[in-house]
Image 1: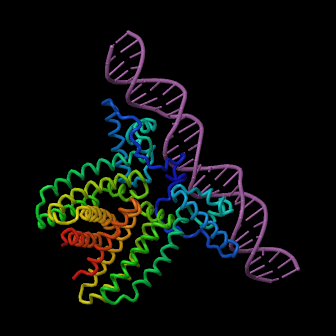
Image 2: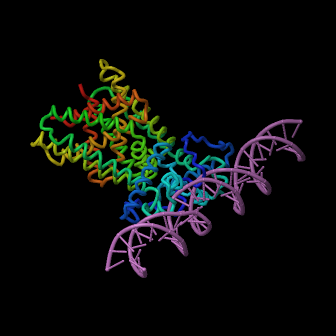
Image 3: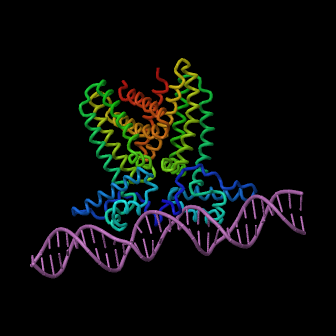
Length: 211
Length: 211
DNA sequence: CTAAAAATATGAGTTATCCTCACATTTGCA
DNA sequence: TGCAAATGTGAGGATAACTCATATTTTTAG
């Protein structure tokens, strides 16, 4: 699908060159901001590198000075979202000590995530396209594992007698199911989406609090 | 990402012209077979229209005689898989009358699906890329709804007192979670994948047989 | 059987887009 | 001040999807 020889291998695509001067750091910010706007408007697939450059007020060459390819831009934005959300999740689950606390915290977390997905077209687009891009898929997987770990530690606290490996699997699965439920919920109508999210919440909590 | 102006609108992309003669029907089959091989080898994204034509022994022009664009080829293959699997699912759930029967049938269904995903690189690739392509996403959604309906009718039989709308939501969600679980399971190692599928099975059955 | 019409086949050429690269400019620093 | 490193530029190379004018085969009508 690329114009050039396909760099299909899904490498992490680190910046070709890290911006070290003030000037270039500002320009990179402008590039990301421009990409963000364009993704929100038309989706990352329809985003054109030329447009990103134009909107950021830089040349195409500058774009490629800091991003090895188009996917790297999307990846950079995705990484920011994950970093932000991980902090939020960690905080929400940190001081859960009993079943009722988990129920409350988890329920709230799901709501926050759902609202975020509904409100942020960029996030929505990126995580929708996740499956097509290997690097993004891996980022999401790593993010999901990290988030699941917060859940795991809560579960270990609540059910010290249970098999830790089983709890890890449960937490990871529940978390991934949550992300899938979000994607589903935003791709159907608002009303059905709400119902699906509510159903997921019940299902997940039933599993997390089982036994 | 396309070479040409992006036809991003996700229309259903029906054949530009349905093959009406024996000759052309055979050629279309060859095109699909060639595409199937190439997708299995390198993924649908890396599949080149020129290669498909060459491998099928037809010209590029002929390819576009019957498929309006590249996505239409993938879509045609996807449609076949869904038609096949729907028949299988319908049969497996048709004569479930009690909880134990549902447990058995559902468990077997999940195993079959999982094996299918593991064994069929084409299916794997297509459903992985599903999120990126609107037409495919819609096909999968429709397929999922249809399959969920089989589950719904079983649930209505088993729990006649329950709210039908709630059962529908549950069935749809459980089914979609299943597809997500499969995608997850095949993207991690075999061992972890097995554990995740088993965990999903438990979680889904707990939900389906609740109350 | 024949001729017109419809369906099918072809592939060189058009177009759109990603990305490179040789060269220009600015900044940090001894 | 002068040199090296970092940064900036945009015309052009490369690729792959898709078109279209034209040729061939099959079907159909008289």
